[in-house]
Image 1: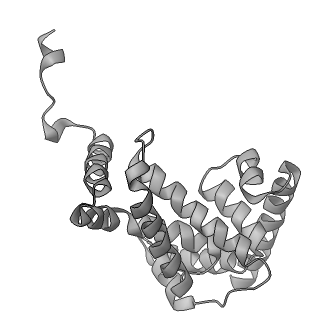
Image 2: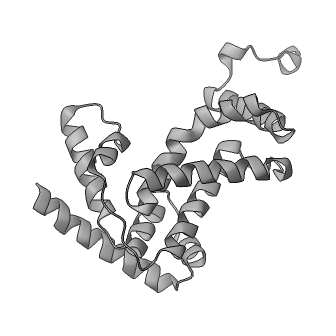
Amino acid sequence: MLMSTMPIPQDLQDPVQAAADEDAALARRAAVADVRAFEQLYRRHHRRIHGVIARLVGHAGERADDLTQEAFVRAWQALPAFRFESAVSTWLHRLAVNTALMELRSRRSRPWPEDDEALESVATPDTAGQAMLGRDLERAVATLPPRARAVLVLHDVEGWKHEEIATELGMAVGSSKAQLHRARGLLRTRIGVMA
């Protein structure tokens, strides 16, 4: 009984929950125009947001940088209306995915140039072999057709269900499944060629 009323010391809290609580506190301050709080949110999340955007748009060059900035501008604008029904990190992630998907929809017919140097910075390897595999995989994913790449990233990396992908990309569930199959086949072929 006494234990239920005692506060849990900071060092004993779940680190994930502690980070979520800190994000929420920063977001509440940022929602009332506290620029420093928003800068802290940016520093805490920009790498992850940039990573998902880069994977979705197929390259990690200037366009991914621009879209990352665009996602954070949208976050700044939307924070006053944020209802804290999900974690701030989840909300930012979803906002980034939506920003990238809007880019894909607006540029369906134009391919993007590859930026090998930027792709190397996306991977965060712990060994030299994993670094090579990470770069090869990122390059192979970047060469996929945009819709196949988007389905692959949303399904295999982000964990979305085909129904969610179909709704978000404006396609039938069967098309989402077919695009995933196509993307995986193309990846197998392209990684085999790189090896």
